[in-house]
Length: 226
Image 1 (spheres, rainbow, N blue to C red):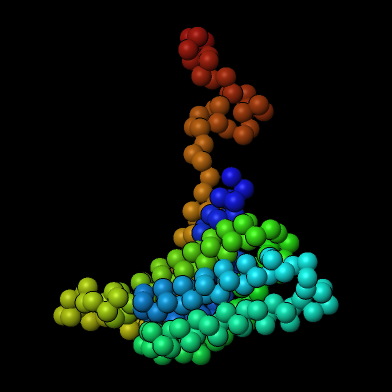
Image 2: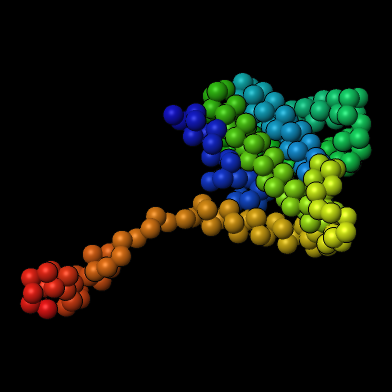
């Protein structure tokens, strides 16, 4: 159950982008389309998973004095691997992500999970944490990319969704549109995460019922004395 909690916490409750507000640069830069968003999310998840595994296995070997440089070297190795893979097999995505692909090395999400979680926990929880945070990050980018591409270009994954007769709102694929969509998505996620259960109506559900002279009004009405 604990591992399941580690796996699911990064999706909404501790979403690295929409709750802790990390990784803002790639979030705003590459989410002009849904395909770019998924590409960045999957690449980041790969690096996050690989680095969490290695750091968790080597946590008792890496000296504390050089732990951060060691983490960065490990992360950079996985970033180089995913960059070479994308360049060889998906060159269009590699070109679209541009400079933000190698910048995964200094992504606060990856370094933060390495320092806060992987270096202090065993292998399986670290794997679950990496997958959960990766899914949460990918989901956040996918939602933003879909909204911006749909309203900004009238397309989704390159397919025309909104009729060409309807002019797209190009502001959505501009930086201002990215900030606007990010704010709206963060507000929606916070609303869902902090949603309270419905409260009981009437005197019994009132927090001041004990101090109210009419607290027993329902009982008096039933007894015919009201």
